Structures are given as C-alpha cells and as structure tokens.
Amino acid sequence: MTNRILFVCSKQNFLVKTVLQALHESFEVEVVEPDIVEIKLLEKLPDIFVVHLDDDVHSFNGTLNFLKEKLNEENADRVIYLIGTDMELEAAHRILPRTLVTADFLRPLNIGEIVKKISTLNLQGGIHSRRKRILIVDDDSVSLKFMKNCLSEKYDIALANSSVNAISFLAKAEADLILLDYEMPGANGLQVFEMLKSESRTAQIPVIFLTSKDDKETVMKVLAAHPEKYLLKNMDAESLVKSIDDFFKGK
Image 1 (cartoon, rainbow, N blue to C red):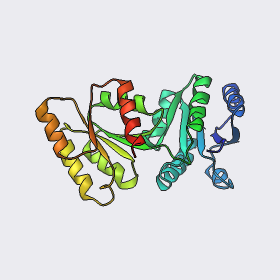
Image 2: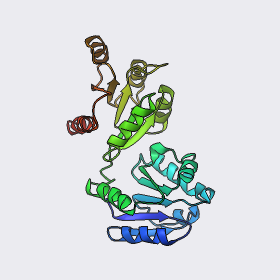
Image 3: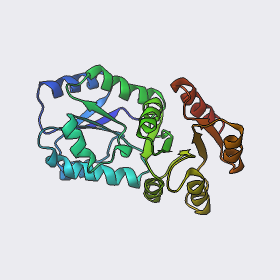
Image 4: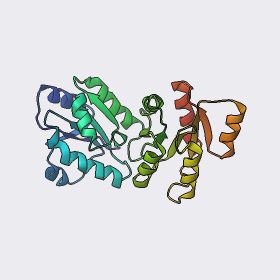
C-alpha cells in the first residue's frame, strides 16, 4: 500500500490543519477542495481518501458521487474516511452508502483515532492486497451493528437488512464472504442461499449461516444446505473475529 492520502476539504481551519499535521508524520498528504474537475485531473489517485465535510455538504456531492463510482468500478480497491457532524455524515450517506465507507469520524475529532485507523490499515498489508469484503445479511439492526463493530477493523463490511437488499448489493458489487441470517422473515436464509447458488455471478461466494438456535434439529437443517459453516449469533466478539480469521486463513 502506498502512503498517499487525498484529503478533501473546503477550508483549512485550525482543526483541519491539526489533522493534516498529524497525518503528515506518517503519510504523503495531498489536499484538494471538493472540486471534481480538480480531482479528476490528478495524475494518479491515491489509495486513501479522507473527506472533511462542513456545513455546505452539497458542495461535496460531486466528490461523493465520483468516489462511489470509483469504488463500484474497482471493487473497493480504495478506502474512504468521512469526517463530519451527525447531520453532515447523514447527508453524505444519502449519496455514498455506508457500505462503501471504511469509517466515519465524528467532530469534534479524536485526531489520534483517525491516524491510528489509517496506520493500522497500512500495517496490515494495505489495499493492494485488498481487505476481504464481508456482506452481512440480517434483519436485526442490533446484530448488524455488533458484527460490523467487531469485524470492521480487519475487513471491509457491507450490510443488508433484507434478502432484497442483499441481492441488490450483489448485483453491483462483490463479496468474499456472506454472513447470512438463517431465520430472516420473508425470504429466509435458506431461500436466499439457494438463490445465490443458482446464479453464476454469486454461486462461488462462500456463505456462513448465522443462527440464534443451537438445538440439534436447527443445526441439522442448517448443515443440510451445505454452507461453509454456521455461527451462533450470541457468540462473543473475540470468538466471532477468530472464526472469521480462521475461515480466511484456510482459503
């Protein structure tokens, strides 16, 4: 992974200058305004984008749309960090889905946190060895949030709260692993699994079922579908991360 960062901001106030100073200690940082023409004229885009939003979030619309197109085209070979208030981040995510953003940082900003997050990514081998992308499909928002918090340090996480959203996501993006809730309402996990395996584009994506039940009957039903494995939804964070790490080590 290169040490280059493209830092997008509309003005360099004291906070922005402090963040830039901290990043300059470990990275080569190029600062641009949210001007899509200027960004497109760059000879080579870096691997890391940091977008510092401000009150005029609409001025970033072109940049956010550009980044969304790039990530979809290049299968997430770049990462994006957004900095802003709750309202600014909410507005930005209407254009750039949360599934495509590596992390959000709330202002007032913990500068050490963002530097640590980016540095950790660099030490892990970076983006050219592309972090594995996991699509988590679960109708339970609490479970989605828990699993994202556990796994996002090491993996690119995409979330879907229904079978429809999962299929829609996979129609335009790829995943290295799907964590699929077996007991979803509507089209349940087994039906989604069968749909995925029937399509050439998704047939080869490994699927791990998530289940809240560990009785023999449920486990036998889950295993009868022949997923890669199954995980209990009540497992602790450390066990979840280890299970996913062990899965990818075996690939």
